[in-house]
Length: 433
Image (cartoon, rainbow, N blue to C red; front, side, top):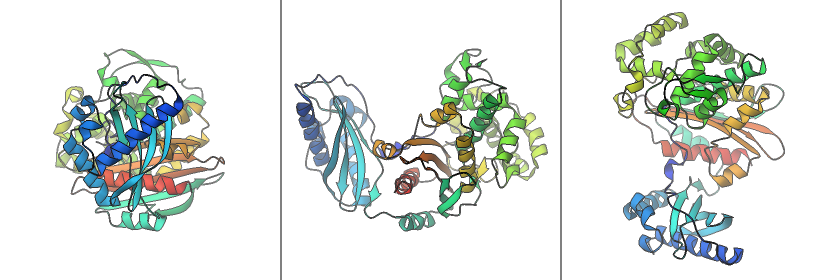
């Protein structure tokens, strides 16, 4: 959900990293031989030529039964054609390797880890998003145009001036962005640190919890946490309680200043900057409450937010609002265009805060081969029913900076998040070429 823990980018993947502890073979060559043998067997499973029980260990198959493996293979071959083989093997460390699965019309990076010797069966396996053969920006543009609802994307180059558009579709269209709004909170905090108002090492007590989810929600009230910890959790796992604590701490004046300084084209649509608990409360209150909020000017919205009873939010069930289809996503949300998101990422870059950039890079939300093609990859995204948004700040190995960003909204139905995630990964790959 947009204000819950961000669904990791790898929703198209199988992830079952369970028990490891592989004993060392006699040599690196022996390790490579074992790993390559298992890679070939995994590919054979995807081709329907090998029994999963002969390749994967019992813990993996308990988490990911053979029927799910078959469903994954069917989904990917429907998109990329028949599985033809593998290439690009690279041993990461003992018992782990990355490789590329080759389909008739696409490729997909993958990773596996082996369990204990002597069996050394596959204990962990991921498949990342497909990249069609001969991919290009025209194809991505056409795929965005075919999405239901409204969608937009952009690639920007960053330099001394304003972000320069390289390619985009509806780059100036304002859309719901979910938890991507947390970029503005990080920027406001980083600016206050630069100005000496706060320090990353400042300690505050846990208070004012959002609805259940995230790490900080599980801590006792009053537990001491640093601002750096709160910001790290807010960005890397989209922790809502951490976010709400920081929104209250930096204050609405600083947040409004950040939104306006960034050059947001429609700042009033973002003001005041709601906490996640406030968004949950308004959506819980029904359509009339959402309509009143959407019609109000920022000053009136502030009064409505102040009047909310948030006492029961920390114990509320997220499923009462999220997971049942889009809820007022065009009325009660955080709104920005791809152009707006390029500008706030550029501001974060220009603030010169190593800590903020390090925080953005904790979870780059892309497969290892794509991440390794960049010298730096920072990320924030967000989603809820009917909303998904993804934004990267990237630096190539020559030192040039870029922003890759995109959003998709549909107020009538939940989205195929995996389809959008694949589109955005393709875009990030092409932006580096």
